[in-house]
Image 1 (tube, rainbow, N blue to C red):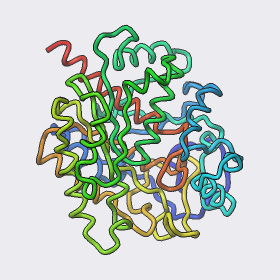
Image 2: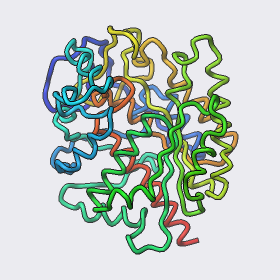
Image 3: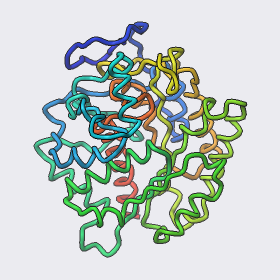
Image 4: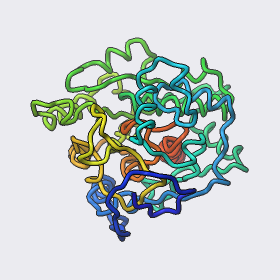
Length: 378
C-alpha cells in the first residue's frame, strides 16, 4: 500500500491501489466539539486532518519482558511471537497464524518485534496525547498518579470501560501499564479499572446496569468510556435493520441508570475503528481476506477498508450526530488515527499489543487531565 510516512524497512505486501498524497481538510476553525469530529470524519484524509503518526524509534519506551508477558494474557494481540499459536489452542491465535502463512496479514517491522515506534501527534486539542519518552518515564508516571491517585489517596477515580473485545484489549493495555509503570499490584488495579463486556446494547438492554450490581456504585470522581460498534454492523444484521439497531444501541448506552452519578463530562463515547480488511477482498469469515501494511498510511480513506461490509464512516456519523443532538457526553475519537494503522492489525478487527492502543490511552489521559485541572480551578 501507499505509505505517506517513511517505513522502517521494506517487506513484501499485498498489491493495492496507490493513493496520491492528499492535502488534509482544515477542521481547526470550528468551535463545536462535535462539528470538529464530524468534519474530520468527512474529510478526504481523516487521519491527516486529525494529526500525524511520527516515526520515533529512539523515544518510544521499550517494554520489559514482564510487561510483554502481561500483554500476552490478552488472547488477541500477540504479533511479536510467531510461535504464539503453538502454546495455545485459542482459535484467534491459530486463525492469525493461518492468515500469516498465506500472506493474508502484513504488519510493520516494529509491530512484529513488539515495539511500535510510531507516536501519534496532533495540534488539535481533541486529538492531543500525553507525551512519553524513553528517557523520562518518571514524568509520565507522575501524570498517571494525578489521574489514578497515589496509593494513599482517599479519593481515587475509577475507570469503567464498556464494550466488546476491542475494549477488552484496551483494558489489558491500561492494566499492564499501571502494573509495570506505576508498580501497582493486579489487585490494586482491579479496584480502579473495570471492564464491562457488552456486545450490542440494542439486544442487551439493561446489561450494563445488571453487570454493575456486582461493582461498587460509580461516583462523581469516576470516568466512563463506551463503545460497541463492531457488533452492530451489516455483517451482524444480514436481514437489514442495522442502522435502526445502532441508533437504539446509542440510546440504550446513553441512559444507563447506574452511571447517573457520573458527571456528563466524565463520560466518553469512543468512536469505532475501521475494520482493516481491504475493501471487496473478503472479510473475517472468508479465507481470501487481505489485511495490513508495512507502515502507517496517512492518506488512506474509509472506503479502502471494510471488507465485504463497509460500515465506516456511516456508523460513526450516526453516533456523532446523535451525540451532537444530545450535547452531553465527550468524544474520544480514535477512529481517524486508527484508519492509518492497518500495519498494526492483528486480524482485521483487533490490534497488535503492544501497538497503537497505547496512544488511545495517552489521548484519554490528556482529556482527563484537562477535566481534572478545570475542576480544581473552578
